[in-house]
Length: 432
Image (tube, rainbow, N blue to C red):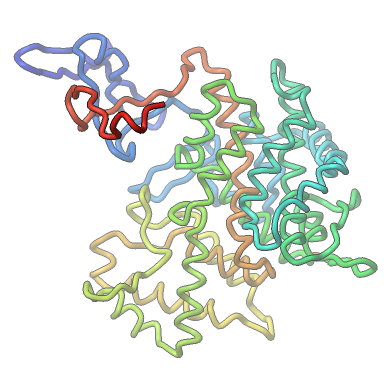
């Protein structure tokens, strides 16, 4: 017998089914509540509202767990392969050798964008934010690939997904080069996914950028750790736009816009700005933490705490180790990493932060790693978008194939005027 919850309103009882997930998560199913009672639920920010049932990503915020299709994200650390994880998210299982080779070849073969698309970049001012260009150009891709407006079979979906995941690197690199007045660099078919992206970012005519193994692994891991994160703001946006049957390109372009916000994808920029302010201001981490605890101060400890995780963000634990591997032994060891480590030590031993569950999150170390790779600050969120794209694609596909899919249409509680008569205040002289 299915468990139920009973809601009593004005003496009337309503029976609501209890839904249970594979990890024991339980939810009250309110789909029939309005039809039965005329009532809706109110949950600003959707902090306690489940919008879907999904088999892609599992998070346990209390225990600091993140799994992709059941695989703990820590298990991708030693041999990080972003392309492999992208396939896992989109298709539900790790690729075999034939699937991986086919998809990798497709990524290589489709890396170029149509030559006429390059002219679109000229329409943006040099000062245009790269995220604005990224969103616009992903949307424009749908015009150049009308064959992917309808994804009716697995082969067509795979082709559309490969083009998005491949070309997003090219668009991102060209956006960066546009803002710096540099010539566009074509993708190199001899390079793998991450080295090819960095080649398009940093190579110059007659002087090719060579990506070493440490940088390749660091960026692969960073992209993997950002690849999906359940129903966050940008993913929910992709699902909401996709629920109208908008095409995959348009839906992902909307996700870029949602990610652009400083409370979402731009958080690691704030962390780096904080670390730099401590360093250039010759302030000690102890002095900064003291200011952060002062309620009369506007100083905030950036990169700590998370909407979901109430203990360690597991992604931050992995990135902390990667940052140490990437920067250890370098003559130009980044002083910001030492500041970050000291801030972490102070916060984790201070009851003020521990009692408030303010542990390091993924943004705390990602900015330091991107800085070490040479990625400029205005491209941080673009890197986040490249990483998150497979998750958006997977979520779009899952929703699109669900037999229960409906167009998203939240309700509201109206708090405006009651019915009011029309009385113009313009006077007859202003008529028409």
